[in-house]
Length: 624
Image (cartoon, rainbow, N blue to C red; front, side, top):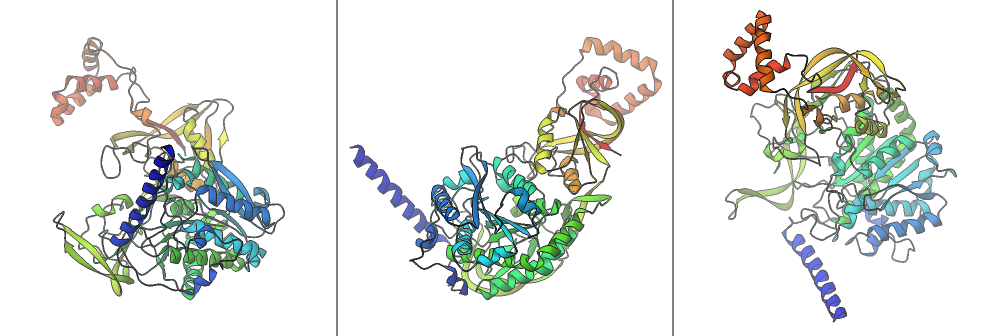
């Protein structure tokens, strides 16, 4: 009976798997037929190092254990490769990284000090978007036992095949309904339901902490984060960010525009692919209203890299293209980038050093489209309301796909049908290029020992700091928070990424503060000075304050009874005509206040020395 039930379960699961895959394929838009030169990269059936994905003709992708075992065999067989664990997930799975180098010593210090440029690429930060893993397996196979060994003559390569290892094993044919293959896809978030590509600033997850540690220990000159899109249909199969972006690394942005983009696009086109910029429709549906280039915050890998002056490219393969096409395009892009670093790696090192030396007196915390009131939130692009008065940056010749608008019989609203036929159209291009919400650079920041969790995360980022061994009194500038709101970026009082987000205005105070032993001082005169500013200034949407790490300052812990406050208030009014005048004006201007006894007593209480001086005081101080 047990065997019979087991067989029934297996049959049911297999049938559900096939049905799920079949349904997804039938409801997706029609796909353009594709054949490209890059198909020659697929190994022959008799190759002993044929990857699991190649064996299935790119219908499936290997499981975590299959991937790990395959790489263990490959790295054991090749002296060019080694395999190391860079951390563990909360469910106990190792996060592995493959090191490809001709160096006998492949330690972090050896590769960090090598004259060769070092490239880091990662796949599976969103584990359902796993193209990069299978492309990396093929490329490293060809480096070890194919015709690509010469790639390592002048470049070292680090490759993380699966970053979200727990999400990767939460695999199902039902996980990504907008994506064409593979049949089995991992889940978007990790086992804690956290999106790893929203975690670069706050560092909640073991996975992103592991990557940032690799960046600090190995010091790569280029970092590539491999994804797959959602959203509108178009002809491009490989899109990416980085080129010409606004941010804190002008030299790197220019290099990406003039060197990387030119080379990558040429190589992708030569191999039958259609490269393009990362595309967002202004109306989040089609491109009839134009396209928009967004500047994300440092919660995202690419903006985080720009902020810390690391050349970072976020790749977004187009979800509606066949899996084989996407994997092969990723292989071409990885190889193209390694070859580019052969010739341009040293110049990129010099450009990076120059960007790291910049110390601007003030930096923006965000960018917006000219004439828009505020920055566009990536998570709520569909809610964006735009004015016809917006002026586009320029026009863009879009390699699009024909579409039709229909009236839904289910929702009675409009929806789009993509028809699978190529169409080239000129569209308005809007870009978040106006810097906003500027912050001035202090000499440094004092972070009290009580903020130990924030100090720990600043250390993981690699930010240099001095730890006090004895108490020190210093004159500082501090912020008092006013008008605090506890809501996410959709203005809902709901948590986001495991945090209750906070916003508010700041009122500056100049004070003398004593910082105890264990407190830290962070100078902004360091390569990661800009990153420290963005993480520690409350105005920044990706500061620790905004992510809710300082909720305790909004909690009042001492009170005064009415029978004490009543006589005290009378005496205060008798002793100070100025206070009496202020009180009368307050009642006149604020009727709610005038009719609220508790508010009146709190107002008087705040004027006494008994009042908690640290209520609403942001504890991180600026050294001027």
